[in-house]
Image 1: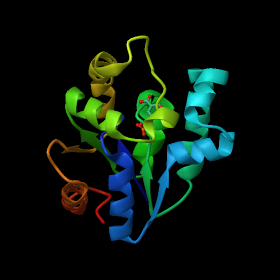
Image 2 (image 1 turned 45 degrees about the vertical axis):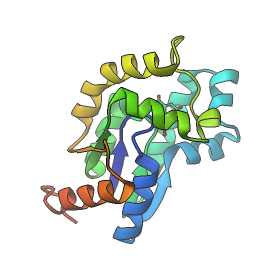
Image 3 (image 1 turned 135 degrees about the vertical axis):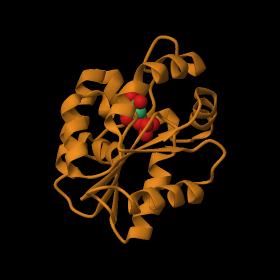
Image 4 (image 1 turned 180 degrees about the vertical axis):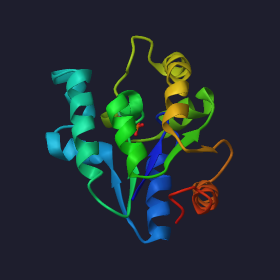
Amino acid sequence: MVVTLIGYRGSGKSSVARLLAERLGWAFRDADVELEERAGKTIREIFADDSETVFRDLEEEVITDLLTHDRLVLATGGGAVLRKTTRERLQSAGPVIWLTASAETLYQRIHADETTGERRPDLTDQGGLLEVQSLLSERKPVYQQASSIVVETEGKSVVQIADAIWDALKNEEGWAI
Ligand code: S3P
C-alpha cells in the first residue's frame, strides 16, 4: 500500500509525508526529487530547456515506478494528479490525501520556501498570487475527485496535520492502517 499526499504547491506535502512515514515506520519518497535525480536537472531547467509536457511525461513515469513499492508515503508535485491515468494509479495503490489551504496562505508558503527557485517555475504568464488563485480554482475539482481524505492545513503545524491524517487513516475503509 502507498499513502499519497496531493495538493497545490506549498500545501506541505513533503514535510508532512516525511513525518507520517517516520510514524508509520514506512519509506518516504518525494516524486519531484526523484524526477530531478532521474533527469539530471532541476524542474526549472526541464521547463526551460524542454517543456512542461516533457516534465509531465517524466512525472507520470516516476510516479508509476514509485507505486510499485509497498509501505511507502509518497509526496507528489502539485500538478501530478492532472493526468487521469496517474490519478487512477494512485487511487488503486492506497489512500490519497489532499492537503488544503487558501490561495493567500499557499502563496506565502511558496514564497518563503527556499526550494521554490529551482523547483517551481511559473506555470502561467501571471505568476505570483494571481497564478495561485486561478490555478487553484481550476485544480480544486481535480484534487477533490482524486482524494479519499481531505485535510485542512490552515493554521496547523506539520505535527498537527500528520495527527489529523493518522486519525483519518485509522478509519479509512479498505485501507485502514
Ligand atoms: C508543480 C508543482 C511542483 C513541481 C512543478 C509543478 C505544479 O511541486 O512538481 O513545479 O504543477 O503545481 P510542489 O507541489 O512540490 O511544489
